[in-house]
Amino acid sequence: MLGRHAIVCGSSMAGLLTAGLLARHFERVTLVERDPLEDSAQPRKGVPQGVHTHILLRRGLDIAASIFPGLLEDLQAAGAQVMDMSADCEWHVAGIWRKRIHSGVSMYSQTRPLFEWRVRSRLAALPNVRILDGQEAASFLVSADGTSIRGLKIRAVGSDAETELEADLVVDASGRGSRTPQWMEGLGLPKVEETQLKVDVGYATRLYHRPAGFDPGWRALILSAELPRIRRIGAILPVEGDRWTITLGGWLKDYPPTDDAGFLEYARTLVQPHLYEVLRGASPLGPASSYRFAHSQWRHYERLPRLLERLVVVGDAYCSFNPIHGQGITTSALQVEWLGECLRQGMNTLARRYFEGAGSMLKGVWAMSTTEDLRLPELDGVRPMGSGLASWYGERFQRLTTKDDEAIQTFMQVMHMIKPPTAMFSPRLVLKTLMRQPVSSELARGPALPTQGEQQVA
Image (cartoon, rainbow, N blue to C red; front, side):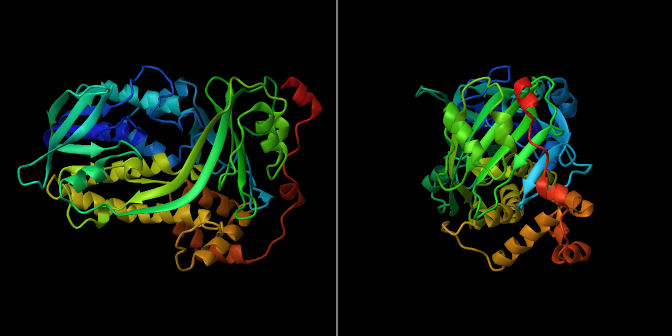
């Protein structure tokens, strides 16, 4: 045990994972959350993107399962769908349909509220964890010399009465609206630098019945963008309750409508007609929900010459990415994993060690996300040296994944953050990527469109 008490601000996925980790290192852990929390898989106000499709990368899932043993079995029992990311998914990318093989990279597909609920339930079951919902952080408590955190002031939402909580460590997992930069500046610390990339992404999601007897030969369907030419995406993923989540999205304010006719028409304009053909015969379970994301942002705590000791920041409060790329939860999990490594070295200089390591890790993830977005010439962002070459190689590599088993397995492992991006640059894969090879007519043509009979079943 490293201390008597630790506080986590926010029950985001980053906050839940952090609290579970800290329960192993502190006598008591308190999770402070502004929203009221129900013991069910209900969307909550503080997670406006929660009703939309989430792809949980395997690396993040493995970290969550290491913090909460039994989580994977719990998810399956609650109806989560387990799929091989290649064998079970029909995926159009770089103008070609990707070859389907057993990649060995499995993913769990469920709604975000279900995943959050099962993790929160496991956290609440820990005997040394207390969850205070309906409460918000008001300000930090700091040491007499102003160099270290000693706790947090909290208050009930809508109240001015404050309660002081003493703590040996405070973790901010309160999301993009985090007030830590302002509070630190108010204590006389330097302003936190911030990098932003404006993407103006928007998407709409709707739940549907998965029609009985409808078997197109795949369990999931993904139609990727081909930036800068094709800027719209579409996806069908199975979730608990024998349902589908169907999501449509686009960059640069090319937002999909949420009315019935507009949603269907947007689907018709996608790069391939398959999602549209499925959608026009499917039965929705409710209205479509929209979400808009203006910019990716990175608050550079790792650059600060002075830090508040015993304060760390995780998740979107630190760095948040274009959600279309599906990296958010897994990147948060990697930060939590790194925090655990830092804690094993003790509490001395914890903040400095944590932010230096987390900042280094974020460089790679930020580059993966923004390099793709920066293929859009309209975006106002600094393009790193070699980004044009990286985009050119990446597109050719994607085309290789339409026919080469090794390339498919490697890409899936990189996408799911099991391997670093450098794995795609092995001498053998570089040679294969640079060689021009014909694509079979089957992969160029793709899966058959749903038949009229299948539409009637739907």
